[in-house]
Structures are given as C-alpha cells and as structure tokens.
Amino acid sequence: MRFSHGLVPLFLFLCVLVWSCSETLHCQAQTLPQSEVDALKKIGARWRMHWDFTVNPCNGTSGWFDQTNPAKPIGVMCSGCDIGNCHVINIILPDQNLTGSLPDEFSNFTSLQVIDLSLNYLNGTIPFAWASLPLINLNLWGNRITGQIPDQLGEIATLQFINLASNLLEGSLPETLGNLSRLGTVELRSNNFTNSLPKSLGNLKSMVNFLISGNPISGEIPGFIGNWTELQILHIQGTFLEGPFPPIFSTLGKIRFLEVSNLKGDDGKFPALQNMTNLQPLVLRNMSITNGIPTYIGNMTMLQKLDLSYNGLTGPIPDNFESLTNLKYLFLNYNKLTGAIPDWMLTSTLIRIDISYNSFNAPHAPSDCFTGFANLVSSYSSTDDNSIKSCLRRNNPCSGIHENHNLFYKLWRPCKMIIDGNEYQDDTINQGASDYHSFDEDKWAFSSTGYFMDVEDHPYIAKNVLSISSAFDSNLNCT
Ligand SMILES: *[C@@H]1O[C@H](CO)[C@@H](O)[C@H](O)[C@H]1NC(C)=O
Ligand SMILES: *[C@@H]1O[C@H](CO)[C@@H](O)[C@H](O)[C@H]1NC(C)=O
Ligand SMILES: *[C@@H]1O[C@H](CO)[C@@H](O)[C@H](O)[C@H]1NC(C)=O
Ligand SMILES: *[C@@H]1O[C@H](CO)[C@@H](O)[C@H](O)[C@H]1NC(C)=O
Ligand SMILES: *[C@@H]1O[C@H](CO)[C@@H](O)[C@H](O)[C@H]1NC(C)=O
Ligand SMILES: *[C@@H]1O[C@H](CO)[C@@H](O)[C@H](O)[C@H]1NC(C)=O
Ligand SMILES: *[C@@H]1O[C@H](CO)[C@@H](O)[C@H](O)[C@H]1NC(C)=O
Ligand SMILES: *[C@@H]1O[C@H](CO)[C@@H](O)[C@H](O)[C@H]1NC(C)=O
Ligand SMILES: *[C@@H]1O[C@H](CO)[C@@H](O)[C@H](O)[C@H]1NC(C)=O
Ligand SMILES: *[C@@H]1O[C@H](CO)[C@@H](O)[C@H](O)[C@H]1NC(C)=O
Image (cartoon, rainbow, N blue to C red; front, top):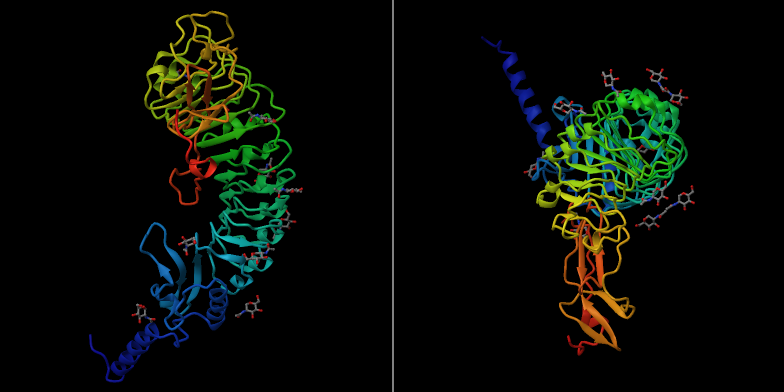
C-alpha cells in the first residue's frame, strides 16, 4: 500500500493530535466536559476527597479510580473518552465516611449509570434532579436518608437495580415504580415504608430480587407476584403483610431464597412449595402453620438453612431430612412436633439444630439437652416421667431446690464471687446460636435460638467487653 505525499503528514498530524488528547486535560475531545469537572470539584470539596484535578479524572489512576481490589473497584469511572465522548459513568464510593446530603450535582453527569454510595453517613432526601440520569444501578444502602422515594424515580426507565436498604425512608412505595420495566432488584429492607404495595408493581415482569423485610408495609400479599415469573429472592420478614400466599405463588418455581415471617391472617396451612426445588434458605417463621411438615421439603437438597420455628407444626420430623446434606441450620423450635427425635440429629456435628420447645413423645428420650450442636431444651411433651431429664421436659420442672433468689449470674469471670452477701457465679462459656448450657447443677441455665445473620468479623460490628475492675472494686477476690 502506498500513501500519497499529501496524506502522510496528515496521518502523522492526526497521530500527534490523538496522542496529545490522551495526555492532557485541555483537549476537549478526550476529557470530561467542563460542567462535569466543575461538578466533581464541588462534590470533591464537600466530601474532602483527595481528587487530583491536575490529572485527567478519566485517567483511571491518581486516586480517581482504585482497582487494587478488582472485585471492589472504588472511585470515579469514565467512558467514551477514546471516541471523543467522555463522561462520568460510575461513581462508586462505598464505605468512605461520607457525610452531608446526597449531591444534586450528580445530575450534571449526564451519562451516569452507577451510583454506589452505600455504607456512608449521608442524610437528606433522594434528589428529584437525579430523575434525568440514565441510571442502571442505584445503591444507597446503609445511610441515613430520609423522606419518601420520589415519584420521579419512576422516570428513570433504565433502572435495573435499586438498593435503599437500612435507611430512614418512609411513606408508600410510589406507583411510578411500576413503569420501570427493566427493574430486577428492589432491596428496601430496614426502612419505615408503610401502606400496601402499589398494584403497578405487577407490571415488573423482570423482577428477580424483592426484599422488603423490616418495614411496616401492610395489606395482603398481592396476587400480582404471580407475574414475577423470574423471581429468585423474596424476603418479607417482619412486615405487616397478611397471608396466606395467593394460590399463584406456588407456580414461581425459580425462587431460591424464600424468607418470610410474622404474616398475619394466615390460613394455618403450609404454603405449596413443591415446585421450588432449588430453595437454599427457606424461612417460614411465626406464620401460625399448624399442619405437618410436607415430606417434599426433605427432597430440597439445596437447602442450607431451614427455619420453620414459632409455628404450630404437628406430626414427626420427616425421615428424609437426614438426606439434606447441605444443611447448616435447622430450626424447628417452638412447634408441636411429636414422635421421636431422629438419632442423626443427636450425632450431627455439621448442622446447628434447634428443636427446643416441641412435644416429642417417643420412648428412649435423649440423655441430655444439648449435644454441642443441637438445642433440645423442653423438646419433650410435658410429663412427670422422672426417667426423662427435667430440662428436656416441656414443663421443665426445676430439679434443684427453689432457693436461688439471691443468685446473681452472667458475670464474665472465671470464678464465683460473694459481694454484699450475694453470690455471683461465673459465666465463661461463649454462647452462640442455638445453644444450651446449665450451670451449678442445673440451678440456672441459658438457652438461645437463631443464628448470627451477618459476617462474623465485619468491622462495623461493635463489641462491648465490660472490665470487671471498672464495675467492681478490683480488690474483690474469687472465692
Ligand atoms: C495518568 O496518571 C499517571 C499516573 O499518575 C500519570 O503519570 C499520567 O501523567 C496521567 N495521565 C494523564 C493524561 O493525566
Ligand atoms: C449542573 O446542572 C444544573 C442543572 O441541573 C445547573 O444549574 C448547574 O449549573 C450545573 N453545574 C455545573 C457545574 O455545570
Ligand atoms: C472512616 O473512619 C474510620 C474511623 O475513623 C477509619 O478507621 C476509616 O479508615 C475511615 N475510612 C475511610 C475510607 O476514610
Ligand atoms: C446531615 O448531616 C450533616 C453532617 O453530618 C449535619 O450537619 C446535618 O445537620 C444533617 N442534616 C439533617 C437534615 O439531618
Ligand atoms: C408512570 O406511572 C404512573 C403511575 O403508575 C402513570 O400515571 C404514568 O403515566 C407513568 N408514566 C410513564 C411515562 O409511563
Ligand atoms: C415511621 O413512620 C411513622 C409515621 O408513618 C412514625 O410515626 C415513626 O416514628 C417512624 N419510625 C421511625 C423508626 O422512624
Ligand atoms: C400482570 O401483567 C400484565 C401485563 O403484562 C397486566 O396486564 C396484569 O394486570 C398483571 N397482573 C396483575 C395481577 O397485576
Ligand atoms: C408446578 O408446576 C407445574 C408446571 O410448571 C404446574 O403444572 C403445577 O401446577 C405446579 N404445582 C403447583 C403446586 O403449583
Ligand atoms: C409472631 O408474630 C406476631 C405478629 O403476627 C408478633 O406479635 C409476635 O411477637 C411474633 N412472635 C415471634 C416469636 O416472633
Ligand atoms: C422425593 O424424591 C424421591 C426420589 O427422587 C421420590 O421418590 C419422592 O416421590 C419424592 N417425594 C416427594 C414428596 O416429592
């Protein structure tokens, strides 16, 4: 191929131009529009970000975008800079101690797709001005945001993912959310949303994850959830919603995470879950279910967590539960289960089991109330049969003499102490989930249920260890 003499210098000139554009902030074709730079300057000053405006914010370096952990990149990300259409597209600043209100100035980033300001201390309301943005992902969980979800959010037709969990939001969910036909995730847990779910949500055929636990949302579980045929995650724990599930619910075979509790007005029947063969957690707690546990539950081999506690379940534990090999938590406490406690439960060292407060009644009761993995306290029906250990019996007769009114307990010290004539006993066992311990020949005992839902060592978990010397005179000695 031969270039004509005129084209070679032009080609070289273009190369120099492209090179210089990629190297300097002043080349308009390759850098952010001034309005976006100005908006970044305002936001950066307010949040005291160490943003270096002497380099191109779209350089992807110099503190603008940190990809040292590729799974969790942080910072400001641009796009289109190589084709002369440079814009901020992602602002990802989770866990940065940001304070103050949500910035109106985001509306100047006309191509903004991702806002992630989760786990900060941001307050104020969600700006109306954001409605003009082509957002795909709006993640504000774990802040102090107040007010209602603005109706204008329903104008962002591109939205696929909304996470507003753990804020102070209130009011009804806006009817306009039903316009967001691409919406796949609605995560609103732990707010103060009220009233019933808007009917328009029935239009959202792409709904995959719907989480509203911990909101005083009321009304019946709407029949329109039958339209959410892609649904995989449904969390409705601790709301004011009323059962039972509409019959169409049983057709949603893709659900993998089903966590429901405290439904009022239920019909007492176990919901029909035959088609949900991929369930991993199944939580149906405190739902007034009074029939037996269906045997098909034992065929849900993916189950990791099964919590059917605080119902009125009757009949035996199905035999096929033993084949649930992925199970880590099994909570059947506070029911009316009868028959025998299966032997495998007493020897299991892989599953945290809580079957306390039931009505088991087969002969050959277990010999103790805690196996190290299973809490069995009061799991047997009331009986005067003294061959059954008292802590196992539902009426839990006290085996010791009733003279413990001066016993002070739960003092974290590896010894017993007498202070002002009161006896303080040691409590050195690090109690955890679904635990039972008795102390001082069964004079007092400790029983727990549930499990810790969060990552055990997350930095936002606070521990308060009381030093005994600050509470009492350090000269006190163990007896
Ligand atoms: C991009 O960042 C690097 C590293 O800080 C710097 O050397 C380079 O000059 C920057 N380029 C532009 C165009 O800002
Ligand atoms: C940002 O946009 C608003 C209108 O939404 C406008 O008034 C303001 O001047 C813009 N800011 C900058 C820095 O361009
Ligand atoms: C946020 O504040 C905490 C406590 O002062 C500090 O340990 C942490 O490093 C800060 N995080 C950032 C990203 O500045
Ligand atoms: C928002 O937070 C800032 C700083 O943390 C505080 O000064 C301001 O009073 C708060 N505003 C509201 C409405 O709570
Ligand atoms: C959005 O939804 C509301 C209420 O459901 C409706 O009145 C409005 O016409 C919708 N807007 C668009 C643009 O579809
Ligand atoms: C929730 O909202 C109600 C009003 O609807 C209000 O009375 C209540 O104080 C709010 N609760 C919290 C925790 O903000
Ligand atoms: C399900 O979606 C269709 C639109 O495809 C709508 O006409 C219907 O009303 C929805 N069903 C419910 C119960 O909302
Ligand atoms: C399970 O799904 C099949 C086909 O998808 C359907 O015919 C059946 O009615 C469903 N079962 C229940 C209990 O909904
Ligand atoms: C069960 O749910 C009811 C509301 O329906 C509530 O009042 C009660 O405290 C709940 N019990 C438990 C153990 O969660
Ligand atoms: C459970 O699975 C077994 C083996 O695949 C099957 O024979 C049985 O009918 C299933 N039970 C129920 C209740 O679905």
